[in-house]
Image (tube, rainbow, N blue to C red; front, side, top):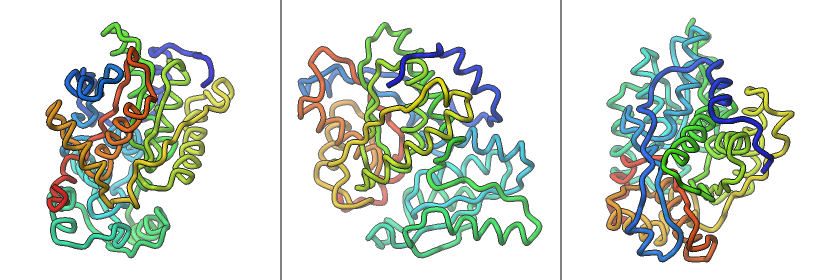
Length: 343
């Protein structure tokens, strides 16, 4: 990574110039995981609890939505359009944030991306909470295009005299990634307060905005911390390309493009199972181990896969015994209830 150019307060000052809606309970805790550390016999493990951001069961997407929906309110939008699969954590959090801000939420539900059509998957968990929050659903068959259907729904709303604001798949664009830049500043501050010497931060990476924002933030204020994104889509090359593109957008928004230069991103493959949303045995083991060692609940599609990646890296000798490593828990707890057969 590039050398540090800013301290956290200076980077936070740049972030403060962007529209932002207060949605999260911050700062989220940074906690030790001593029993998981002992069970794995590896580095000292910590968890950054972004599953505790609060609104609508919480999760890291709320950090993105603070900046995305802050811009929506500033632009005078009266509704929001986004998309995701039936069990999308992002959709659930977007619906909750929209409800809190008084914006009508339209959701493109991508049917068929996950080869699972049982009642638990289609109606419980995140799908149930999203309905409860009042989102308007538009079902569309999965074609591989993550954002095309959003544009069509937004066009229809404009034709009807509405003022829609588009939130991309996963909330992942340069503006959404500002939330992860903020998270990087918050984490670095906590590390300092706790007197830790953290060498790595691991998290699950899919729609790429979180890794892009964390990468920009750490490159600016703590380049000594390695950032490891665990691919959860079984599409590591696509993820890496999106991370680089979104990071460039984020750095441009913050006026850092010239000073940070090219950031080296690490997207780790091999922990996503056979396909997105298909749960591998390694993920089940990781979810159970984190739960039984630390009382930490992760989900089968995102945070549980990230945990499986962290455990796999520790077991594979990625870290020295004396290192301190942080895992970013991105949330997703309601998704557990869509996969009762797995457990």
